[in-house]
Structure formats: C-alpha cells, structure tokens
Image 1 (spheres, rainbow, N blue to C red):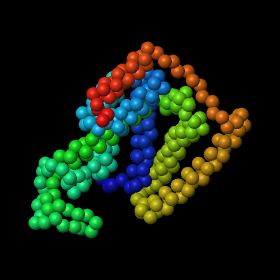
Image 2: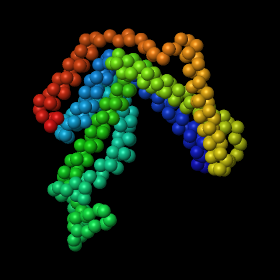
Image 3: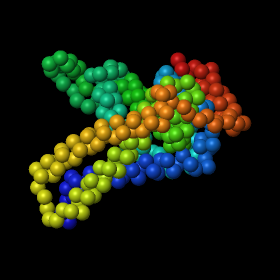
Image 4: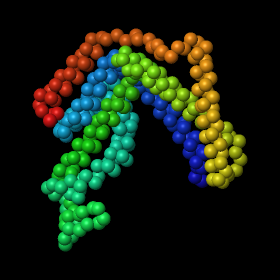
Length: 289
C-alpha cells in the first residue's frame, strides 16, 4: 500500500484533534469526584498544589503529590491509559532532553554511580571542559529525577483540572475569582473559533481529496496548501469584523457579563480541608525546605 501524502495526513490530524477535544469534554460531564466540585475551589486548591510542587525539593514529596493526582484521576473516572498518555508522552520529548545532560559529572559534579569513559587527562573542547573520567553522578540523577517528576506532577495537575471541568464553567470560575473579564472573553472566543477553523480546514482538505483523481506531485500540493492558508487568514479576518459588528448590534458595550450559578457544598468544604491538611502536613514535615 502506498504511503499517504501530507494532505491525507493533515486531514487525519485535524479529525483526530477534534475527536480528542470531544473526548476531553465528555470526561468533564462524568459523575466523578472532581467533576462534582465547585470550579472555584478546584482552581484555588490546584494552584496551591502546583505551588507546593514548584517549591519542594524532596523527591518523596513530589512523588506523593503525583500519586495524589493518579488517585484523583481514578476517582474521577478518567481512564488511566488516556491520562498517562497525555502526561508522559510530553515529558520524554522535552523534559528528558533537558534533564539528560544533568546526570553527567560534566554538568553536575558529585559521587559517581556509573563510570562511562576514562581518559588519560582532562581536556577541553571549545568552551567545554571535560574531566579525566566521564561518569553519571548520584547528584545528577537525583536532580534530573526531581526535575522530571516536578514537570510530570505539574502537567498532571493541569491536565486533571482541564479534563474534569467544562471550559465554560472554568471561565466562569475565573470570573468569580476576579480574573480580568476581557481576558476571559478572549479565551472563550479563541477556544470556540479554534474548533470552527479546524472544522473549516478539515472540510477543505476533504473536498480536495474527494475531487482528486490519481496521484499529485508535492509541488502542486504545496501550492494548494499555501493558497488555502491565505484563504483561512482572510476568512478569519473577515469573520472577526462580522462578529464584532454583530456584537455591537446586540448591545455590546465592551463589558463582558457572565452568569455565576456556582454553589459551594459540603463536598467542596471537605476537598478544601483535605488539601489544606495535605499541604500543611508536607510543610510540617519539612518537605518544602
């Protein structure tokens, strides 16, 4: 079977992006633990957990916070494989590449764990200075593990908050917490119109695929893609003007108004008390130092 051209791959990618967004929104409607909490309390407590993750220097404490995110994901009926993929597929590509050099004694001197190469004498290569023995150090491995686990825990908390809270209610909660209303309005419209233009792009690719008979060369595909990008840019500009005029005709005065129908229940009180107790225990045990 011949390989797919990049037009088909792009069409498949756009469809997958829409499907993933729909699946994520579906999890926010499940009757899970975090889904039933007030979004305002979730934002504040998750922010506190993120701050605790950022300032702690103890690997065991971060592992405990990460274990808490896994337990919360399971209690919120989020599939573990789906949750892990959204976190750990990102970490090896970026965080691992940054943390990998730190495990060597060239970057982090310390007690050697594994000796890799031994030279007759230290040497320099441009601005870099290498010792006579290149080794993986205990301090370097510990520092890299802390860095990777800190990123994994932070990403897990962020993903968990988004997966268990509908986007509209998340924006409403930010409004109740006195976040700038103009910024919230921009976030809401951007989120909605991203999917609109993804759908438009998908329809364009699908229309081209259905009208194409036989193979096409790469040059012709590139020309078509550049013309469609220009079309999308023009359409987005015209649509922004149309939307703004429609808002003015309906009484838009520049101030965004949001309905606040949140209710703080006993479950939210239990969750806030648990979070405060959890963080207080970590602080008491010296995990933040």
